[in-house]
Amino acid sequence: MAAPSHKSVLMLLCAMIIFSAVPCQSQPQVPNGLLSKVEQAIEKVKPALVRILVVSTEYSGGREVKSESSGSGVIISPEGYVVTNHHVAGHAVRLFCTLADRSEVEAQLIGTDALSDIAVIKLEPRTEGYPVAEFGDSSKIQVGDPVLAMGS
Image (cartoon, rainbow, N blue to C red; front, side, top):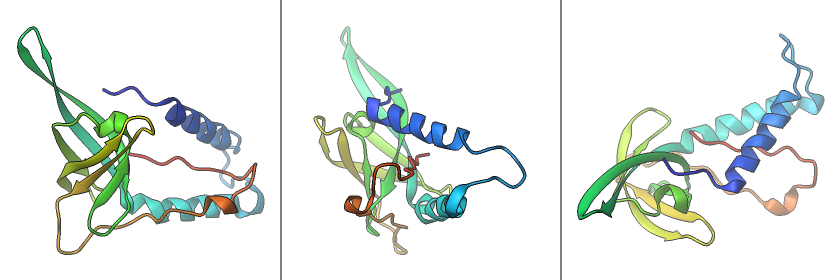
């Protein structure tokens, strides 16, 4: 299994800190409707999240050794392009994605950049297209704004 990047771990820790600060009561006391905004964000992005099963190979002692790992990504186009991390898919021989509706689709590695830890994969085409998450405008956020890290 691929080790998570430092950025992924930091984002997860930030999300844990944000949500651990919310009291566990039947009616959470969240300022300024933050909970409803979080729920809206989750509902908007969740259909476009994918779990990626990665099959890779290594050669050791004259033998081919296959291994499996997993990660997550997000669909960014109705044609099935998915953004994920290089450390997830960058060395894949085969890729299989589980969609939010639990269907499984094979994917192909389109491109990867190890320095920025970004990879793009493409899901097999389907007639109805895929749900999409849109990129936000980072110029609109300020220090102290809540941030969510979502994955499978």
